[in-house]
Image 1 (tube, rainbow, N blue to C red):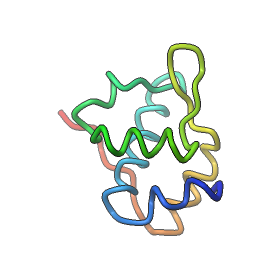
Image 2 (cartoon, rainbow, N blue to C red):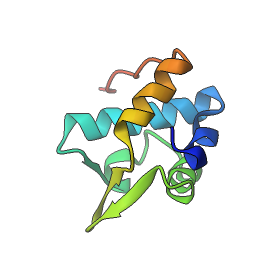
Image 3 (cartoon, rainbow, N blue to C red):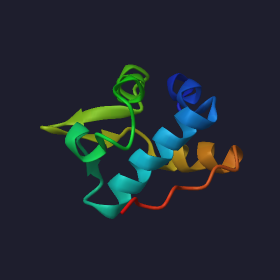
Image 4 (tube, helix red, strand yellow):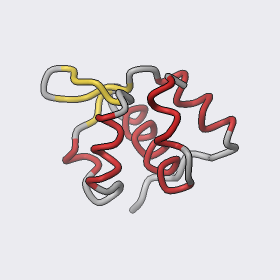
Length: 86
C-alpha cells in the first residue's frame, strides 16, 4: 500500500476501518462520505485515513487514493472485509 497508508492497517481496528471504507466505496459509486461511515468507524479512524492520504477529496466526497493497494494490504494481513451491518 502507499507508504503513508500502511500504518492505518497496522492493527485490527485500523484494518477493520480500512476494510469498511473499501466495502462502502465498492457498494456505491466508489466514493465515501463521513455521513455514510459515521457509526461504522470512529472519527479518529476517519482522520487517520485522511491524514495518511488513504482517502483523498473528490469534490464533496472522498475516494481511496489506491483501492488496489488497500485490497493488497488487507490480503497481506489476511483481513477479510466485514459484512454490512443491518
